Every structure is written in structure tokens, then in C-alpha cells.
Length: 203
Image 1: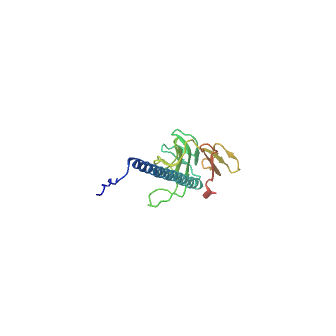
Image 2: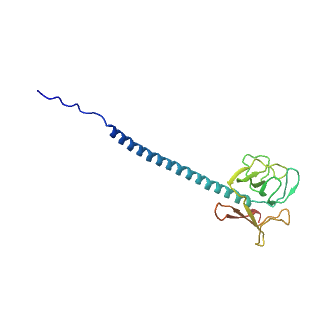
Image 3: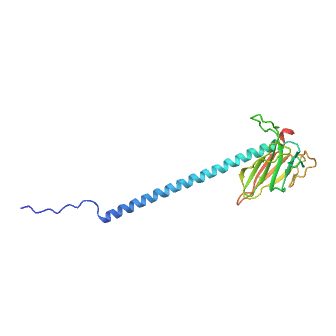
């Protein structure tokens, strides 16, 4: 007579299941942290790349505007005369710089001159650039944000005798400075200094 064998237990015990779930939770948590770190790094890298690209675009447009500045006075939409280059506050907000520049490409052959009046403003958040459809008697087109900036920039002007001035006071309506220094405030550090020649094509 054979003795009855005890049935073999199949599956996992409760302790084994708890251990398996704990190991799975640790692996899943580590994978989630790694994924979160990768996403944060990607977002930070993208934001930094966008800031660098914006700074390069701003620098290119700013230096081109100054290099092609024309010694040409202009009139506003009310007919009032203005010098070829203006800087500082005005009645419409924080004006940084207004000038007339040459080299305005006319791809579509529109009935307009190759000279364009442009202005730079600070709205409390960024440097804005607006163009005018005509140098005289026209209102500006909608402005475009060119560079995020939390504090107003400062300008200095170099005259032909090599002296730097904190304010631009032209002796003649068509007079231009030799160079302009732009100081861009940086958080927690010295301002970024940019120096650009003015009216290179007219010298």
C-alpha cells in the first residue's frame, strides 16, 4: 500500500509577491526619474538654444540697422521734423533709438523707397523693433520682439573726435555719431557691451 503524497504547491507565496512588487516599484521609479531628468535636460537645452538664436538674430539686425544708417532727417505722421537719429524717451514710451536706414530690399517691387525708418523700443519685457512703410508721414508697423530684456538698455555715443557721450545731441539734423555702444543688463553680472559703427556706407 502506497502512502498518499502531499500535493505540490504551485505559484508564489505572499512574501514572494511583495518582494517582486517592491523590486518592480524600485525599477519603475528609477526609470521614471531618468525619463524626467532627460525631459528637463531637453527643455533646458532647447530654451538655451532659443536664447542664443534670439541673441544672434538681434545682434545681426541691430548692427545692420546702425551700419546702414543714413544722414537723412524724417517727418512723423503729424508732419513734425525729426533728426536723422534720435535716442531716449519720448511721449509714446521707452524709445531706445530711431533712425533712417538704407538697403531696404524691395523683393516684390512695391512703390516705396529703399530707405526705411526704424525704431527700437523697450516695453519692460523685451527690445522691440518696428519699421515704417515710408520715412515721412507714416505710422509705424506693428513691432516685433527681438530680445527679451528685464531692464532698460543704456546707450553711449561716440562722436567723430573719439569722445564718448551719454546722450546724443546732434548739432545738425543730418548728423550721425561715429559709433554707438549698447549696454544690455545681465542678471547678477556686468552688462553685455556691444559697439557698432554707424553709417558705414556714408563715410
